Amino acid sequence: MRKVYRYFHSCTKLLIAFLCLFILVSGVSAATQVSGSVYDLTGTPLPQAMVSLTTGAEHQGADVITVFTDAQGRFNFPQSVGGINDPETPVNVKVLGYEQLRVSSVSTNDSLELTVIMRGTPNYAAAAPASAWLAGMNPAKMEQLVNSCVGCHQVPAPEVRAYAKQIAAVTGTDPATIRKESWIAMVKYMNYTSAEEFGRGASSAPPDANRVYGVGDGGEIADILYNHFTGPLQELDAYQFGAPLAVTPDTVIMEYEVPRPNAIREALLGGTPPKLWAADVSSNRMFSIDIATGKQEVHEVPFNQPVGPHSMHRAKDGSLWITPFFSAVLSHLDPDKKTFQTWPLRTKQGTPVGIHDLSFGYEHELLTDKKGRIWFSDIGNNAVGYLDPKTGVIENYKVPEIPGRPGNQAALYGLVMTADRTHIWYSQVGIGSFGSFNVETLKFEQSVQLPSINSGPRRLSISDKDVLYVPLYGAGQLVEYDTRAGKQIGIYDLPDRGSAPYSVTWDPKRKVVWIPTSNADVIYRFDPATKQTTVLPLPRAGAFLRMVDVDPKTGVLVTSYGNIVEHSPGPRMALLIDPGDHVYQKEGSAVSSLISTARN
Image (cartoon, rainbow, N blue to C red; front, side, top):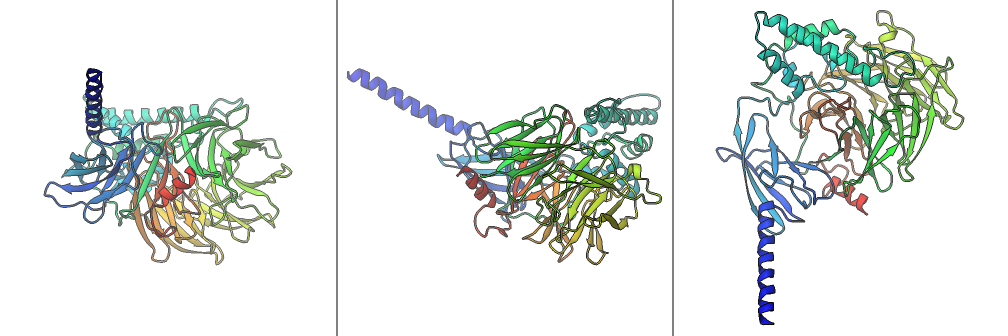
């Protein structure tokens, strides 16, 4: 009997030793607090370094968590982490002008202390965004390039730079001709890809290669690419964010990955408790993500044709309104019941409505007029219109043409509503214009033409004082316009003019404007009181943003990486971002509070 006891005692000791070894090798236990420091080779702490941790299979919640170092180079993750994906390199650190050299660690049962050493590098290519390669371009050419090409993915994204490297490697007697023909071929390929993807909703006519995101002025764009991208694009000798960083040691970014294949375009919080809902524009699918556990479910918009869930709008009750990319079908989602209601939209002439955005107010929530009608922008017909959800009645009103700015290229895009629910303001991305429409008199009123037809005004926002903010996608600028006085307050250069600001969102408590970008891997924060812009950098290349929402209770920013089409390279993630400024919540992590609410 004693032999049996000694045998089991020995086995138990061996098992304990094996578990201790496993914990040591894996680098983290089931509930570990991760912290550490970031230094350069001289031992100098690196402040505001971006530290990202990829969680393992044991962890519940976000797939990647990012924090920033303090003035002493210290970082702390806001919650215990249950499993790290790569114990050899548990974190990835990004600092402009540096590359990660090594990571050392000291672990206990419930903590992991990391020391990260960074080495200066003359090549900024690994840490700089795509926009860095547009520096020094002729502004007019850059506007044209951004408007034409940065609709699906960044330019030059890593895959574009890889293509440039291949071009440079081709030998021949006439390298200039080889380079030019290569860029012409790429523009043609982009147009065919656009036609294939965005022609899926057409019922009869063959896909048009210039449809939606097609490069209509292909010859001119090929010339711009040929003249500007003359080398392999593998090295970059300098890049700066151009403004102070809008981060603190309490800033937290949570990334939730959606498995491919998909073309995630936008994400919002919806329901009680809140979940992340992500729209897949390549299908009829909506993904729901439990932010506490990371568990995902798929929900189909119930329609017998391609829908392509596109722009999403949060309602006061937590429900979501979703516009389509195909088939002109407006959807309403009850996130708690997981049920949809749909409205196929047609003009009086029987043509589809190219619905893009719905009217919302300064709280960034769906806002109807006084009759309960939902107003929308009609990108296909250069019109504004409404749906009465009670009766199903639809009307639309074409915007008058502007001399010298052809209406067939106008592409009426963003839409907001003033506080009195009497006026809507719209943007026309294709012709550099924005204006207003009176929903009671049904008359167009103000019309504002920007100096450049390629400036690219996209998705608008409006403040609680009815001040309009207009992002200029092509020009890399922000317009501030007083709608009550009918005059422009100012137009401001963003820190990176090649950043492609896709939209803007008024933050009603912070009294600032958040500006997500498509080509710079950042979100800008504009303060109207000081006219100053600061920068919130994002953890990865290809951080193509189309929108940002502000959770009304916690102030957490909600967004997603919107690289489309389905087979376009780039991350497929929905994000929660706590800016770490404690405006909404004085103590603790706002994103942790939101996740705790979802868990309970």
